[in-house]
Length: 119
Image (cartoon, rainbow, N blue to C red; front, side, top):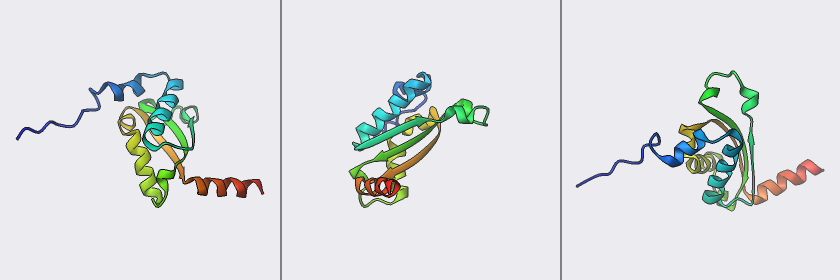
């Protein structure tokens, strides 16, 4: 039986795209991957890399913050939600993303959070 090894991220053009993209385009690429994988009703991706300049490992990739709201998170705990997000950007975590802060909500949780903030 012949087994084909999984794609090596170092030679995969898609994974290299994030590491070679200008910082501004990296946010767009992250947004595209998350949108394709999780169909969010709300998505915000912020590049926090400037706040971490000079930090060990910062040269290996950017620091990003994600707020994502998706019906796909219903019935899934926080760890499971984070896994779904990491799975969507897995190759980029190896090349181009050094740190990813995730806030993942269902639409109901996000609405409740926003209602509580406006009171």
